[in-house]
Each structure stands twice: as C-alpha cells, then as structure tokens.
Length: 126
Image (cartoon, rainbow, N blue to C red):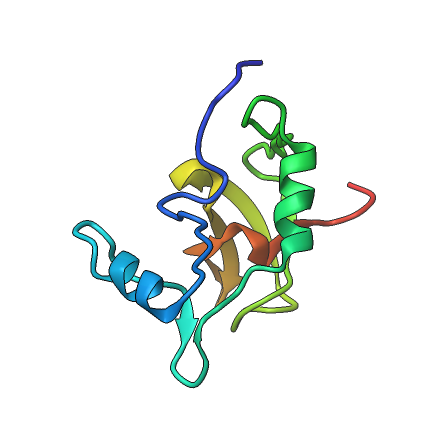
C-alpha cells in the first residue's frame, strides 16, 4: 500500500465574494478558466455546511479517501449513463480514478468502454 496525495477537487478554487465587483475581479483574473455557474442564475454557491464538513474531515489540509481496489475481471454494474443496467468487467482505472475502462459484452463480442468512475459499482456478493 502507498499514499498518494492529489487534489480532492482538481483545478477548483473555493472563494467567497462579498459583492458583484469582487466576483468580476476574480473572474477576469489571468489564469481563471471559468466559474461553476448556470446561465440563468450565475455562480453556484456552495453551502456553508459542505465547506464546514470538508474542513472537519481534513487533518492539516488533507482528507483521507480510501481507494476502492478493483482487480481486472471484477464484475461491475453500470448504474448511470446510456449503458445503465448492463453488467461489465473491470479492465483498468484512468486519470487518478476519475474514469474506468470496462469491457461490455455486446453483439457477441467484448467492447472496451471508458466511463466516469461514479457510473459503475461492484456487484454485491462477489
């Protein structure tokens, strides 16, 4: 086993703005790619309880997240997306766990498919 330190929210910065002017200043700062927002309502506020919960879970700025270890060939169920409800075999993890490669049995052959990790779950009892 080894420890890996990586961002919990890669490329995200949480910031509090007290006025529209502060928001505009931050938004147009060089290096800022965008702000999580909706076209109708503008920037999305993160609930203060969420920030507090993250801080409470952290120790010196780090949050320990236990990685799920899947072995090649492990049976998974796809729970989101266009393949929802299908069974698949785990092949490999990509991009620090953000995506997985699975093998689907389609038309009498195995097809390699990349999916976001939250789209799959292990099948209970296996």
